[in-house]
Image (cartoon, rainbow, N blue to C red; front, side, top):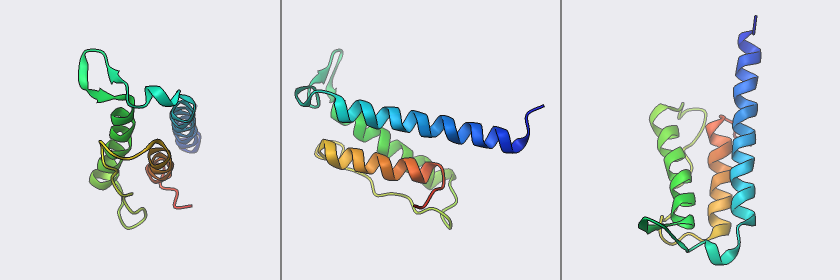
Length: 102
């Protein structure tokens, strides 16, 4: 039988892996693709989707998180934040999603 502790750690480890993968992909995507339009969705680019991921996390943290423990990270401008800003923001929201303040 899986203990509650093992389940909790399993979920946290899965989150850490998913977040690291997202950041890795954004760090390594060719620069010319950052502002490339997504086929079938002309207003969306790789950059707007990456920014949306961070902003969506912030919404979850604000709406269901424990705001006394973890402060909701700042939103990023969905059309203007550059790749470095988004990667830094994803690192902050990734920590906040797992209630890690460091």
